[in-house]
Image (cartoon, rainbow, N blue to C red; front, side, top):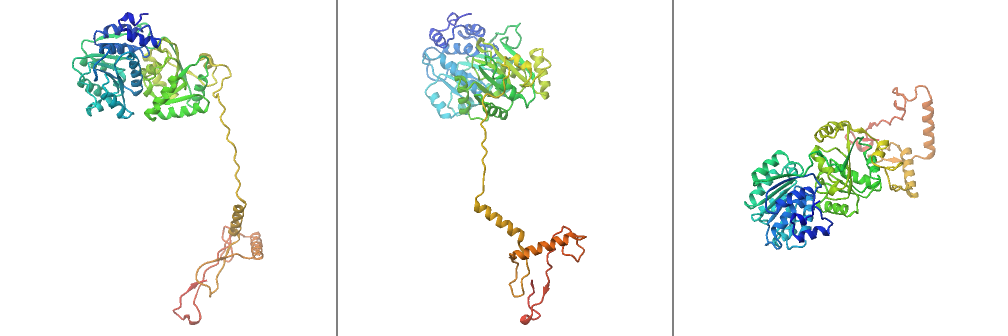
Length: 501
């Protein structure tokens, strides 16, 4: 292993790294730092988690000097907000013994604080394309003096449709500049971009040609699982021996939030990072995960490149990624900085064709994932899950049964209303009463007599039918009395109004 001091890094930067326990350089750093310090344009390609940030960050900081003049002199463009925060923290750590000021520019946060830092003379800007262009258009961010330009995770820029934004940014920075482009994969459009905006770049690849596309220090397990059993399987995996922090990736924001709620209910200390959360909530959740306050993080692919935590032991793909590149970046959250890790991927029956493509592209040699359930013996042996483990570590609170009783007066009122509804009868008014309809309560004797007559009639042959002469309809209910029109007597005369009795 080569130390940073042996690579020609200034002592104050070496001390800042040593304070964090970082002494030896990774292969990509060994290759790019000696070329980047004198100003050579570089295309750096290495797997995620192998130290690319320091590979471009140390040359940028050292080339600006101990006391750079106020104003933006270096620009580092990243695709996502989470990665912006991560890179900002690393660059800020490198400059802690210098007068250099670093600012993070990304969406979802208030403009005011970012603008104040720019006006105060920040020399290094780490930002996402949208907010960078926005502030530049408002003439609040001057990029014309930026002589150090870095594109980090350039392939993700392409996936997110930022290629045109990157071209706009290159037109706004200094024409004579030192440019570095870093990525885990290098698709054709990114290579074409490098040829347009870089000067004689050297392509440095830190991959071992015999190692394959996947990292050798990550063990990959692929299971064909039923969607209704996944939560139970995940809950048991989270109780495996030696499990540290775990990251679980879902395809949708709704699935992420649902899984957070489910695991929290089962007693796990889980947090989430997805697009439906505010930026402040996302940063709070990520900070809690890094600090160890939460040991399970459920995320969508928005965070696949912004989780730089060395002690992640397990990555679980709740749903299969869309392609092999997304797979590599997801599982790259574990096995970082030389550590080992485990990647578990669930494949639904409907997604077997996707797995076939990923398996072929990454040369896994597992065309048929093993059918797996929460009770499968191989699940316990593969992941060192203690025998008898269940999917719940906390008992769900029991819901107390609450008995409700109506007040006595309410019951009485209801009873009275019921009686009224069954005993009220409609009766004809006399000729002297006003026109209209009214109801009266019959006496108990009259009610009993009516019920007895009705019972007697129903017991006879043909009861319940209506032949025109009986008192009942076909449904067995008494027929209503027929209204008759009659002429008023007395002084009413021929023209007297007619009333209904």
